[in-house]
Image (cartoon, rainbow, N blue to C red):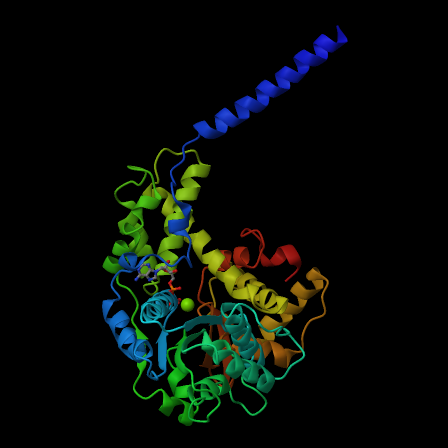
Length: 430
Ligand SMILES: Nc1ncnc2c1ncn2[C@@H]1O[C@H](COP(=O)(O)OP(=O)(O)O)[C@@H](O)[C@H]1O
Ligand SMILES: [Mg+2]
């Protein structure tokens, strides 16, 4: 009896679990190929929309590699999401493949300097990447060596290749050394043959999100780049539409309401034409529709999709930085929300942000940084696109001061730094 009843209980449980699976598979699935909506995925060449001129320019810069000749280094700049990384990787990969067909062995090297933001770390990452492509003949330690030793590894490892394409992405994130140099790595790589460090042809593609990076470059380095500066303009709404349409097969047939792509394009084009944002909005809208068990992705899902995309972007931005970057952003976001309630204010002085930041630190159980360091973090491009710092006239007898203003919706920033968007200043005693 007991056995029987246990048995029947077991089968009840089994049936419930069955039902869960059935319920799950019955819920609408709108997204067929999530990979097409992942940012960072390099779409096949024919899915790269509206960048033919840039691709052609880059190809003509790298073409010497395929002929066994030294190429001119190239500097690409443009705002985020304008296809810089995508186009560079696509062209580098193609150059490598074509060269291989010609019997040349080319190392295709990509380094994201935002993840390796000093010269030493970036050279280390470059050396390790070449080592990997070479089949890891060396044991290159992550730490403990100076930049010059990592350069030596690079020259040694390059012996085994006919050429290399080295992409240094987000090069503007490399912090200046004690002498204020931030482009020594470009100097070393672009002058390596001349300085007889190596015979291997090196194609350098330096990529910057900062439009004025070329002006900041050391004159000698800049001159080795010659005229090879490529500016990637923002996409317009039509190009963003095309970029999204080229990925429509990420969704099942008829899963997208017809207005979704045009509206997503319009939303993404509003600040500057950022393809990453456009694709994120589309992906989020699909996921929101699925979460809501809707049968189609609707225009009505797009506002929340945009908000999530922006919060993700903030989160991504701060993920590579000290936790204090998050605390500072939270402080400014909460101040901004307060100001909205009592009629708005046009930015905050460093001291006001600092006072609020200290309260955030107390809440987080962490010691605050000194005000000078906070000022420095606020001024750095660390917060590029999130915060604006302006010198401001303080009015009669107040002199001028720096005002910090949030460029994003404060709820988005609060969410992006890991809090409930509904959090307000008084909740934590600001
Ligand atoms: N021209 C394009 N065609 C198709 N997809 C694009 C295009 N430009 C950008 N994307 C998509 O947007 C993402 C972000 O582009 P990315 O090259 O990383 O921008 P950037 O490096 O300028 O910030 C890419 O991974 C890709 O998915
Ligand atoms: Mg990029």
